[in-house]
Image (cartoon, rainbow, N blue to C red; front, side, top):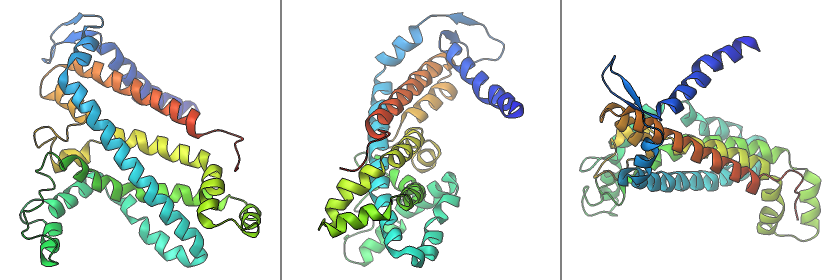
Length: 284
């Protein structure tokens, strides 16, 4: 375990410690310039920033929307694959293909699909008579739609991951429990919400935590599609920290924002585990 521990210490632990330490300093963006200890001033500036508050709200909306859609779609497909049994082998293989696509490639693909005027999606909707013109819906240019539009590639990419995790969990549910409920006259909705989902609590908890953290730090897909626009409507915390660091030249403030971001995700993960993952809790 020593090589792995040294690798994690060098490339995870030490950068994390340096990142947190930098949040207490006013750091010049110029190489070789000095740094001044400012205590919690960067944290005060972060919490007082309207941009930080707006980006936090957008990140929460983006994460909740993405994870909720992936959970609903993933559970539905996992149940379908379970019902099909061995006949779903080919479909399962095809359904996993998006996991092999890089997020940057997915962002470019969906940008061309949703771009105004000549996007393929609007063109098809116009030909089918749903839209009157290809520019009627501006998926990536309308501030009211852009945040949900940039979430589509994320949902498309990783719904298969949720499906895979839930499908594996469904294989571990005792068949005699389902059969007993069926013999007692329980209908499928009753079995789903009273037996299947409660028994999947630990699996759902893992899936939600992993995907929630991953969705909350979404960066490349959004950067490729809108670069945080229009009018900052898709600027999440990841993009804000990046811009504060590289464009605005304030590493100290960026480190403070990132530290707050990290602590918030850690707290949400702990709460999610306590609320969803209840070891020993069985079906009722």
